[in-house]
Length: 131
Image (cartoon, rainbow, N blue to C red; front, side, top):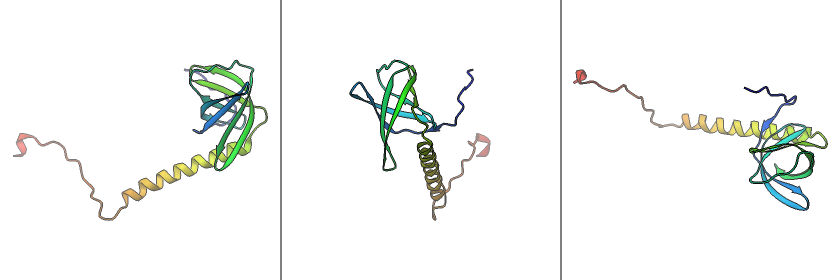
């Protein structure tokens, strides 16, 4: 078991991100982010720790362009810290996740309250003694 040494809250967020490095654009998918950094998953790419990168993505009709520094790379992806903290991005991502969770909760509740919906009861299997 490992100890999580992060000092800031993170929010799970899947958004397509373009990593800009050496005039190349590399496709990635964000896994989570905090006010000060992001974790990205990507296929078969290595960027050395300590390398500055650009991050470009859109969320809720807002285009973000953020400079970052690669602080970690492993088989799962790349961890980068932002050059400047991004509290507005974190708030936007948190609000987006909460809204998504509320929508899915409402869909489940609405399906359970549909008039005329048949509710079935699962009965235990019968034995020969019941006949």
